[in-house]
Length: 83
Image 1 (tube, rainbow, N blue to C red):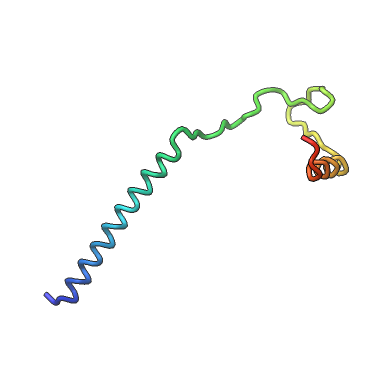
Image 2 (tube, helix red, strand yellow):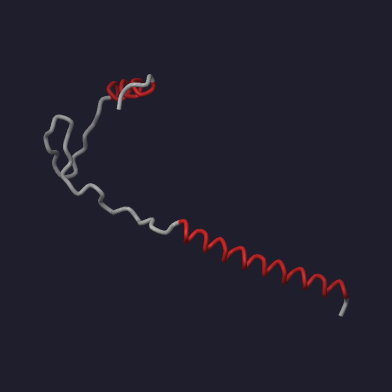
């Protein structure tokens, strides 16, 4: 056998082996990192939505805020106040 071919095959087998080892190690580390992590619930809000004035909203209704009110809240947060 030609020494160049043998050297190429040895390097190729080492690269494949290191790829397998790296993949299995990465899989193990990823699995450990995600231990205890769960998928969020499909419907996290089990209660009835409540508007700002305390009235319950109907099923599927949307609460709209005015743009001015949103901008005031953002400006208050930028200035260090707010929630």
